[in-house]
Length: 116
Length: 112
View 1: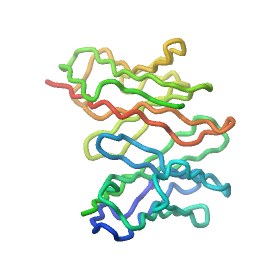
View 2: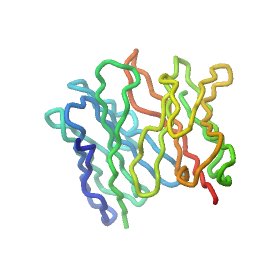
View 3: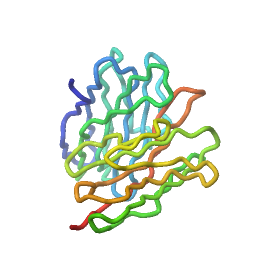
View 4: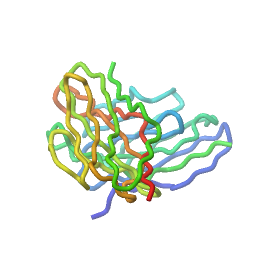
């Protein structure tokens, strides 16, 4: 079946512009996660959605970052007034989260964001 | 604070040699630990998780709570094992899994 998909695969923007990154999770997966992968920092957690619960935003680096998940499916990560340090690969993952503690997270291919 | 440490950025071995990728964690609760792998131009994927006690592609990892370690081992490395390996700890929300906390990764290079 289809895995997690993300769009666009690459995004180049100018400093100060807003960007939107999209994630389509695996159908039926109730949990959705955003991570950021950058040189020297590894993989950092950004935000986590689970069902209809309020998202865990504890990993968002600043108030320029926000995310929403519509209808419990597709998610959009928005970065306002982008800065050069926002350049990274943004990864989305989803998991079934059927109550098990060790549900596997399935990752998308990522969106490579470059801020000039 | 929860933390995952992978002390080696790069590990280079010859084909057929044993390999051990180190991972140490800091977590006050009962840890759920994973190894993820990212091959060149591929997405991040789960390799194995401690609770399953499985061997995948010849790799094994044992959770040592006394040493707070979860090292990944393979007795005979293959060239196709060359990849980036991430150790991860599942953050636990009162019994339900939350986000993963990743180490910074170790790049394994297996030379012919």
